[in-house]
Amino acid sequence: MPPGKPERPRPPARFDAIRRLPYHAPMNRPIGLLAVLVGLLLFGAVGCLPQAPPTPSVTPSASPTATLSPTATPTPTPAPQMRLEAGDRALFYGDWDRAFEEYAGARSNASDADQAALASFGYARTLLESGRVWEAIEAFNAFLTTYPEHPRLPQAHYLKGLAEERAGLTNESISDYERYRELRPGRIDAHVEEHLGDLLRQVARPADAQIHYRLAREAGSLAEDREVSPALLEAD
Image (cartoon, rainbow, N blue to C red; front, side, top):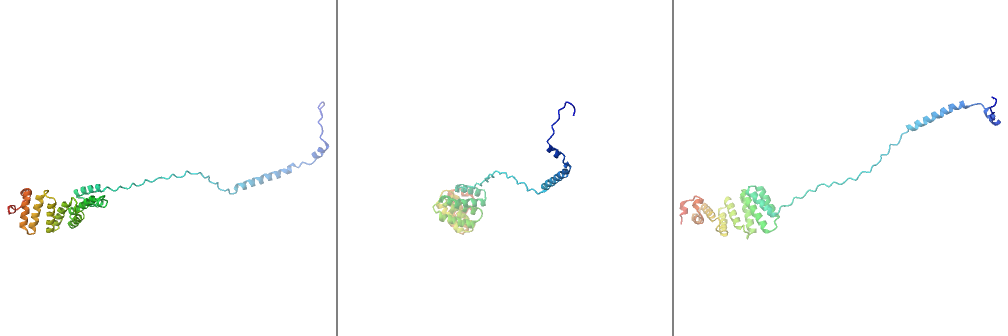
């Protein structure tokens, strides 16, 4: 020991015995490596284990908003008066199908007897104008029976007489024309009287025909309205 440097204290004797034991540390190295390898193997085995699939997170969705579908608006039924006017227009323009439809609708939905009567009258007129004369006769008969006090009664007799004339029912036609003249005098007397004269000639009643031709001449200018035999115009 160099001079002047203090001497380190010696450890107790028991530590000398430990220091003199053989050093076995190198023997522990293989054990440490083996432990490391086993740990790595275990870690790899754990990593290879099948893992449960991740539970999908449920996101609460907003409740669907009910969409209101548009409600079809029912088509309002036309008023009977509107249908009567529509039937008259269709009849004027010769649209028979539309006229039948409108008059039938007005009659089924009529709010009073007058509307029902006008619808029935229009329906019968449409039958006549469309050439269905036999059906027209039946329809006018039904009108005259159902509505005997209606203001259209004279016209119904006249149109029924016209339908009967076209159907070849001359005597029935004469009766309805005469009934029209009685119910509605002074309107178309010249025309009605002349027409009656023509029909009476067809059924071989010349004397009666002369009377009606004379009445037609008095009611209007028969010679200007239509050419007739001068003998008939001058007949007594």
